Figure (tube, rainbow, N blue to C red):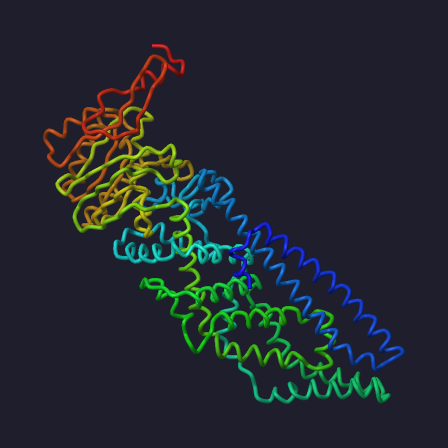
Length: 585
């Protein structure tokens, strides 16, 4: 029902559903007072009037359902409008209102802390369209995962198939945002599903006896002047029988997921059942929803209804009817049937939803950024990019660069003036490798990459709590890199201003030794430095190539073009920068 709103103008749809919800609300209030009037008049003066009560109650229930349905539509439309605002903020790179995922930063990880994957103004804020904790955790897992060309290509095919299905992407995200607000752990629910607490055939006796006996006694009391004492005894008998399943009903009530989760899963299942996918990854995700024997959407809607009933058992109206007609037995029977038929499938459905949340996030991001870069995975030790830019920089301000590191070249020594773009360029390469590993087109016209493992060392800071200096932290980081290369792992590394915590003589000697050791171990990557003396190594090391970023000093201004160039940097600007800051030489 929610999914029919796609093609309507959102403002008109919102006004329409709010108007209908108001109508249902007023009508519901009127019918409630009508029920009260029927009860008062029927019990005091005209008992035949009570015969209309079931029909009026049915109308009351219809109005409740109608009101809830319109409120669901309203929540759905409001989220569609909110998503449009979010798209505009992401496009403007105004990311402060989005979940930063700072808890996912990890110092020991090969590349997470250096590439702005998490934290303020991060890639996670651009990518994350997930709505459940499990979906978010899976996205984080994919972002942190080692480079795997086969998985990346599988995801790429799925994302490219999803991208044209804009309504599907929009509906899937909006449904989750509309109804999943405060998640409840499902561990208790899965334990309840696994528990062997089956329906007993003896329970059919009170299940049938309760409604029949209750109706007969109630009718006899109202119309045949039967003493109300008999009705009281019936209620006491019912309390005795109901006590046998009271604990089970309470356990089921506590275990049930939130109604928003169940509603979302039901609508997500409905969306999946209607689609026909071609990519192997999407077809695998869809398998649980294409079974002819089990319709997941109906199963989830059925559980949503049962969950609503079982969690509202202490509602005054339910309590009265339960004591008269022993309704708990009927509800427990339906729960047991659902558990037997669908219980073992729910975990698989949820896993599919988690995977699809991540793919929807990546597809929506790819559409928002209009990504169309060509990506090629190769088994050769090479990296070649054309017009590559950083995804967190506004496209209108991002400067593209070309870069080529052939199989015969192992190390790029990157020199350049302060603020000229060295570090940003290295992060641009790294973050685009992460995007490619996720299955996304990179922010580049072309991206060709060997099957490397990414390793970075850029933000090495001291830690007073651990008595660790920034220099020692960097050395520990470099040791991790050397251990990986020594183990035969094909590593592409990005090292920013290495050994900056020591004196110039030791830094140059240590840098040269590190360059030789990494090359001998088969490592490949970029090392940035301010030590221009190291650029002379290009004459003796045939695997090393010099690249640089330049600046131009014009009177009181320093200009940058942020374009990478061949050869070492011919001039530096630290002297001028200090002068502009007021330091007189």
